[in-house]
Length: 297
Image (cartoon, rainbow, N blue to C red; front, side):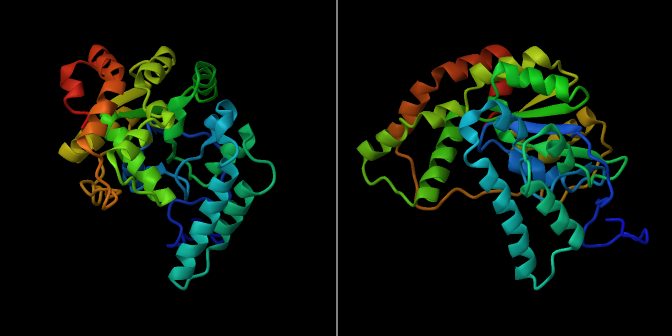
């Protein structure tokens, strides 16, 4: 952060308190539980990338996915509270520019074009602002068309994960949040009937919408398995795609979220999910080929 005297404050690196509103240059999308948190944590380390002090701006899905609108104001209030808790836990006072910034984007009129650009205002000149919001992948066609017009210069990174692994990971997360643990096979089979498990990973519906509006120069589609197999190599691909110089990332091979303990989906439930998602596998192989699909897990 550049203070009033022009000095850089160590507690807020890459922060211009007087920055003008701006649009993101890099946007990360993808299904829930498909590596976007890892992507955010890696890119936030790059000296030429600026990410907000919270993950997921959630703007375009607010505009085009009405079912999201009820919980999105809470998402930003929680971001404000989490920042306060982190500073309190360290016995520190939240820096005034950060506090003012969070107040500005969590109070008053939200989810307008100006509000969205204000999210990236602190990004210094010469640094690429970055928005990583997996929900954008679920936008209807008119939403993707709006994004293409509103962000004509941005580059997009879409991570594809094995459909069953992704659905199982999401199911475990949902059960953990609700404090539930299915006790019988029948109970597990009921859980996998939740339509949200299939909707969030509907690549056959979502990928064509993005490819219809963005060519390979603007949309990089990568397999999730590369995060584990060759994280540095994947980051080099992303750097080349976004015009970033190579950077030495910390903990690129670390797991972001460990699987919840005590939750093991029965093989029968996994097999049922595989049958439900057969069309997704057919789509991915037809669109990207076997070499790509071999790397989605």
